[in-house]
Image 1 (cartoon, rainbow, N blue to C red):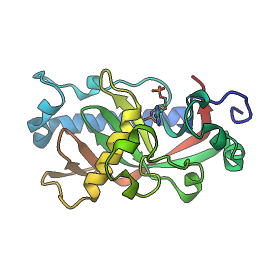
Image 2: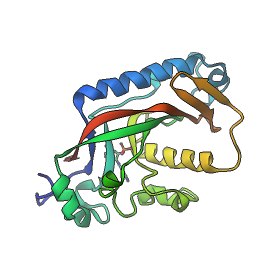
Image 3: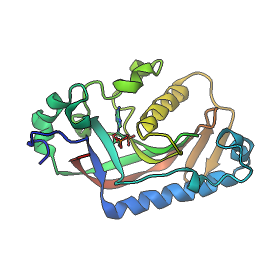
Image 4: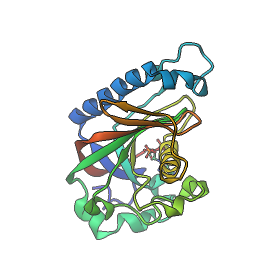
Amino acid sequence: GAADDDRLPLFFGFFINPFEQEKVKSFASNFLKTLSTQEAFREHSGEFSSEKELNLEQYFHHEGPLHCTTKFCDGGKADGSGKYALQEVVKERYNSETKLSLTALMVTPRTLGTRVALTPEQLELWPEGGDTDGPAASVPGVGTLPVGSRAHVTLGCAMGVEAVQTGLDLLEAELLLKGDQTSDVRVELEQGALVYLGEGRWFLTLKEPMVVSAIFSGQSA
Ligand code: A2P
């Protein structure tokens, strides 16, 4: 596997089974449809675009396999990537199957993604500094969140936004959810409780987590 290779992958992560990707994508697109019809959302749609008719499904773009990044290595340029790849647990679990539990959907003017609730076993593959490294270092209060809070699957990005933003949006959302000021906009949907976090940020906590099969692996550039 890539872990034995001289060259490190672009990133390590849990890659959702191709068949189950469709399940996740259609769940998300149904949610976007529902969200668009909510009066509360329509009142705030100007936070996404100044266009009169906002089409959320066309607003977000995604290419490549759905996955939950564990370690962004940038081919070895990222801090600690060699050390990560050499860990026994990384080598042992490479190409092994696991179940990912998706517990929330998040929509912001920048990104669309799911929260991933990592199991203790999956957290063994979460790198040191996984929540706080890189651009996450500038999210105020990020160090107060439980380990693995940044774990997510990027489902789409707005034009000109890079995927790394999803994890940052998720950290911000978790901090707001944890904070004192409870959102005054809360809508009970069939899928779960939808809350508005301000500035175009919407968070749906799923009643039932969506469980999908995934392979721990690496992707080269
Ligand atoms: P994400 O994990 O949110 O999907 P890119 O295509 O932009 O090079 O990114 C490749 C993958 O690595 C994507 O999955 C992306 O985001 C993730 N990623 C990119 N940059 C970083 C970073 N600085 N820290 C953590 N993950 C990153």
